[in-house]
Length: 327
Length: 123
Image: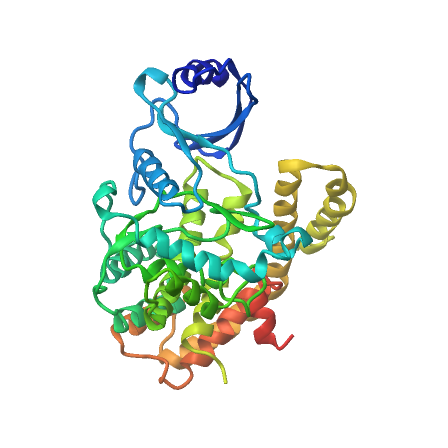
C-alpha cells in the first residue's frame, strides 16, 4: 500500500503532518505514475500530487528530461512567479517510493473540451491567449545559470529526429514526406537566442480555472532550443478541438499570444512560429503512428492506442491546409 | 459464398446495442473506454463501405502520376521517394489534387467529424 511509504515520507518533510489519506492513482504506465493524496495536518489537510517512476525503473528514456529536472524546473518557475505548483519534496532512496517528486495540488481543469465549452470558463477564454503568451515569455526568461542539464535541440536536429522516427515505421505517407521536404527547404537555421523551451505547452498540461491559467505541468520534454518552438506548438490544429479558427488552443488568436509574449519583454517571430507549427503538426502525426506501432508491439494492447493511430490522417489534412491550401 | 448478415450489418448491430443500451449505464473511465470502442466499430463499418472504391481511385491516380504499376504500398513508396528527392513537388501537375483527394478519402473513414475535414468538404 503506497500510503504507508507516503506517510513516512511526508512526516519527514512536512512538520506536524500526522498521516496521509485518499491516495489514488491518476494516470500513468509502468514507468511513470501520477498519484493524488491529502497530507493530514492539524491545521487542515493539504492536497498533494506524487509524480514518480516506481522503484525498479531508472531514468526516463529518449527525449525525457528526467523527473529530478522536472522538479527543478517547476520550482524555478514557481519562484519566478509563473503559474506552477510548489514542489514540496524530491524523493530520496530512503523514501522507498522510486524516483520523482511531490508537489502541491492545484485545483482546476485540464480537459480541453470543458475549457472550450463550459460556461464556467467563459470569462477565461478571451484572456487566455494573451496570458499564456506572458507565461511562455516567463519560461523563456528563467535564469539560465540555475537550469538543470537538458538536451539541446535545433530545428535541423528535430527534422532529422522526426524523419528517422517516421521512416522506422516503414509505412509510406506522401503527405508526411512532403512536410519533411518543406521543413528541410524552410529550415530557419539556429535561432539567434537559445532559451529553455517547455516542449509540450498545450491543453492537457495546463490547469485552467475560471480566472485563467493556474499551473503549467509536465516539463518532461523541456530542452534548450528555439523559443519560437513553444509558440508554434500551442498553435497546432490538433489542440483546437474543433475551434479551428482560433489558432491558440481553440480559444485565441496568434496576435493575442504574440502581444502577451511581447508585453513580457520578448520578441515574437511569426515566420519562425509558422515553421514550428508545421513541425508540430507533423510531430503529432508521427506520434500517432508511434502509438499504432506500440499497440501492435505490445504490451499496451489498448483500444485507445489503436484509435490514436488512426488519427494520423487528421494531421495529414492539417499539413495540406498549411502547405497546399486549396483556392 | 459467406452467409448473411454481412460484417457491416453485424458490426452495426453490436455498435448500436452498445451505444443505446450499455453506454448510458456505464460511468467513469470504463464509460470513456466504451465510447472509444464504439468509435472503433463505427470506423470499421465506414472502412468496409468506403475503402474499396477509395483504394481503386487512389491506385489509378498513382499509376497516372508515376507512369508505373504496382501495389498501393509500392506506388505510395515510389511517390514518397520522388517527393523526398524533390523530383516531384506541389508544382507537379496532379500532385496536389492527388494528395488532397487521398487525404479526404482517408478522413471520410477515420474521422468524418474532424473540423478541418468538414471545412474542406464545404460543410
